Image (tube, rainbow, N blue to C red; front, side, top):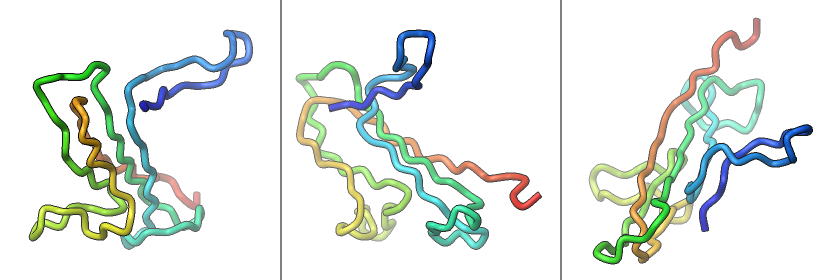
Amino acid sequence: NTLPMGRQTGGAGGYQAIAENFQAIEFHYLDEDGNPTADPAAVRTVQVSLLARAGQQDQKFTNSAVYCPASNPVNPATGQCTNPALTVWGPYNDNFRRRLLITNLEIRNVGI
């Protein structure tokens, strides 16, 4: 299944989709030293991992890839996610093409 991204609006008929065909999303919060944190006051960077999936299948393609979100990055020595016990997306073993985007959002003006 894919997740539609949207927003709730009062006068426009409720939930309004703004993007479709997302397989998974993760928000990974880091403190000023780049360490994971669950403390909202300590967050300085948000790493967003977004896995998009094609809207239609490609019968000439089989997707057996594993996708590693920011919380479980690829180990360059092995080409696998650092810790298989943590979040890993896939393998899906289907005919959908996917793309993983990971970006950092720096939190500015914290504590002002």
